Image (cartoon, rainbow, N blue to C red; front, side, top):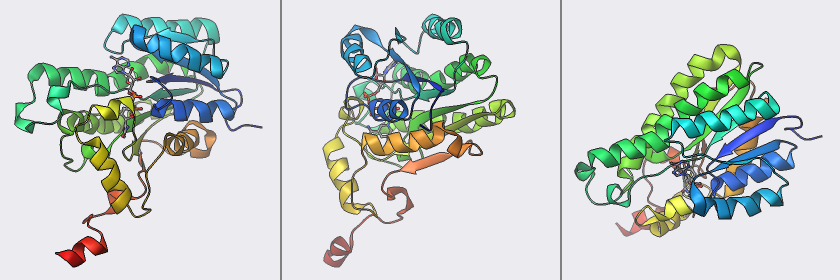
Length: 265
Ligand code: NAD
């Protein structure tokens, strides 16, 4: 028997096999969930359909999360076909390259709006549409990063978007909690993905995390998938409004220098 037997899970943000969303999809599928997938744009369509086939998923719908009509359409299709939803995974983010790197003060107004719309507001827009499909409760989760709390070089506009996402998580959790719907976020350590490739200096960040995090290792898509399974399943039935770290412990550090580095100073 699987932890997700009989549950229906909708996942936004699958781009390819390196996506965090793929780590989550595989885990939820393995535990018995019916997986529904969404993708953004034609390029993603070509990549996502073969992945859907791999897990026998026949619900694969386009959705640009900045478009209300796209969101309306996908949730209406779920209502008509399944009548309900148990799990919603938001694994979506975007920022213009110009607004990552450079100087923080140079973030453009348009770039700010775009990043916040796609990466943060979309969680509100999705939750509003998911709520009526979760009459017996459900689990909603999104993916965040520690740059929401502490300054990380070059993360800039995305750091602001992640701060908004984390605050949105808490307000949504309070708003829909009385209906038994839980809203949480996973704060993952850096992972090599398409989105991460847009952050200047990501390779160095990966190396640094591995060298300095208490567990001295990097986080994988599967690691996030395991925590997503916990959040999606009844194991976390009384957990809501939480930011759960899957970062090999990096966020507990006040000083990230290793003993060897300190000895050299
Ligand atoms: P990814 O590139 O595989 O996934 C990002 C997804 O966002 C893609 O599928 C893309 O199609 C989608 N997207 C972008 N604009 C969209 C739009 N307008 N409408 C719908 N979808 C859109 O990269 P990932 O690293 O797996 O990112 C998933 C989530 O994890 C993001 O929220 C990211 O910020 C977060 N995260 C990533 C890391 C990391 O190091 N990779 C760490 C912590 C958190």
